[in-house]
Image (cartoon, rainbow, N blue to C red; front, side, top):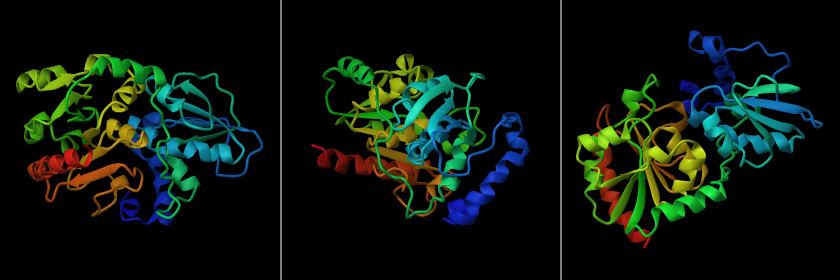
Length: 306
């Protein structure tokens, strides 16, 4: 991961495969009856691409699925139920099955996060074309009606990630940190937060300032439909940030001082997502500086998008 964060892709992708030998991955290791696909040309054989870690990981690396199809493969993706509808929109995908489906027939398998290494990804050939996911039309229509004529620019917010994530406290600023942003009267804010959103909003007296949509966000297709109707998403390193970037929606990513390898070092953009802007802590734990910068930039964002 240190190699990848520093941009040493050739060695980094190779060493990244050692993750399967760690105790951390013991609970998701499986005995595969067919070989792992190594990027070879295919003649219609089925490649089973399987989800392995977080939702955001699968969203980020779904960009490689069309490349498997380009090499002549039939692409079947195995992923959690919440992702099925959105992964089905990726070009070149022949079928999407749920993670508990053991009946899939395939010729090769490959873990989703091994695909960058399979395709020898570097900064020069990284597949950065967006959108590669689409909000289903039914969801776009539903949310267009639901949001109606809300005034001002529409901004979706996420303030924390999955509490089961080992680095969640580190990566999540929490709702209170957003107060400087929420003070801007030119915007209508929406909560895209899933876990404990109503409780957090009530605790800070923000139920009138931020519209809570959590009760209607069951799958990522739901969330994609909302994002399609927003002007901006602001989020820490969570699946929603990946989703917004994959949909080619404007997204501001809030990062801790030492982020995950995929965001690299010392840059305010992301090669993965052309519509993403990155705000980084200048020192460990300093979310205030991040939000001071974001609050300042909201004025310029509003003027630019009038």
